[in-house]
Length: 308
Ligand SMILES: NC(=O)c1ccc[n+]([C@@H]2O[C@H](COP(=O)([O-])OP(=O)(O)OC[C@H]3O[C@@H](n4cnc5c(N)ncnc54)[C@H](OP(=O)(O)O)[C@@H]3O)[C@@H](O)[C@H]2O)c1
Image 1 (tube, rainbow, N blue to C red):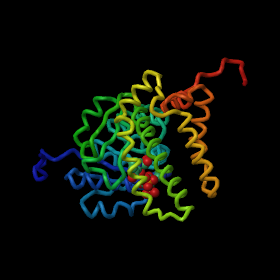
Image 2 (cartoon, rainbow, N blue to C red):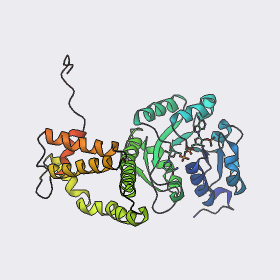
Image 3 (cartoon, rainbow, N blue to C red):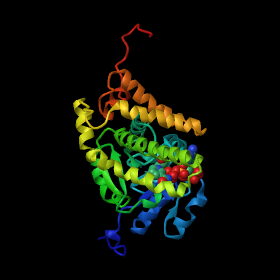
C-alpha cells in the first residue's frame, strides 16, 4: 500500500486527456486511489469536478503530457488524438501514451508508428465496461503493444479494471474490442427489434423485457459455455443433430415477415435471414447453426480476371 504522505511512496503521476463520460470515470478512479492526476480537455469545464477533488487542469496538451510519465487518452476516435497532439509532438519524446479510444486496428497501428516516430512508447486498449463500472471488480480492459511497456504500467492500469494483455501488435486490442462490440451492439439492436415487434402488437414492453434478458443470459448455457461452438468452428464440422440451419432459417423468415406485417423495421431480420439463406444455398441446410460461419468468414478471392 502506498502512503500518500510519504513523497517517496506516492504513485507515479498519470495524465488523462479526454474527459467525456469514460475519461472522467477513469480520472475519478485514479484520484480516488491517490494517484496524482493531471487532466486536459478541449472543453475545460468538464474538468471542474475532478479539479475540485484534487486533479490538476493543465493549460495545454503539452503541459498535460509533461506532468505524467503515463498519459491516458480517452477520446471519440484516433483523429481526435491527432487534432489534440499534432501541435505538441515535441512533448511526446520519452513519454508513454495509452490510447483507450475506439478505432480500427489499422488506424491504431498507424498511430503506434506515429507515436514511435516522435519518441513515445505506445499502448492501445479498449475498455470493456460502461463508464460507471470503471474501477469495479466487473471491469476489464484489453491492451496491446510492447509487452515491457504494458508490464511497466500494469499496476496503475489495474486500478481501472482487470487488464487483459492480448499481444504486442498494437492493433490487437482494438480487434478484440471491436469483435466484442460486434456481439454487444448486435445484441442491443436485437433487443430493440424484439421490443418493437411486441410493442407494435400492443404488448407492454415492461412485461416482455425480463423474458428477453433471460434469453440473453441463457445463451452461454445453450452454447455449452462456448465449448461446443468452438469445437465446431475449429473442426469445420457442424453436426445438426439437435437443430438445423433449415429449421432456424425458417424462424429467421418468420421474424422478417412478422416485422414487415407490423411495419417494424426489418433490416436486421433480413440481414440475419440472408446468413441462413446463403448457408442453405451452400449446402449447409442440415448442419447446425454454427455452419453460418462458412458464409460469414472471409471468402476466397475470385481468380484474377474473373469479374463475375
Ligand atoms: N462511455 C462509455 O461508457 C464507454 C465504454 C467503453 C468504451 N468507451 C470508449 O471510450 C472512448 C471515450 O468515450 P466517451 O463516452 O468518454 O466519449 P465522448 O463522449 O465521445 O468523449 C470523447 C472525448 O473526446 C474529446 N474529443 C472528441 N473529438 C475531439 C477533437 N476533435 N478534438 C479534441 N477533443 C475531442 C471530447 O472533448 P469535448 O469534451 O471537448 O467534446 C471528449 O473529451 C470512446 O472511444 C468510446 O468508444 C466508452
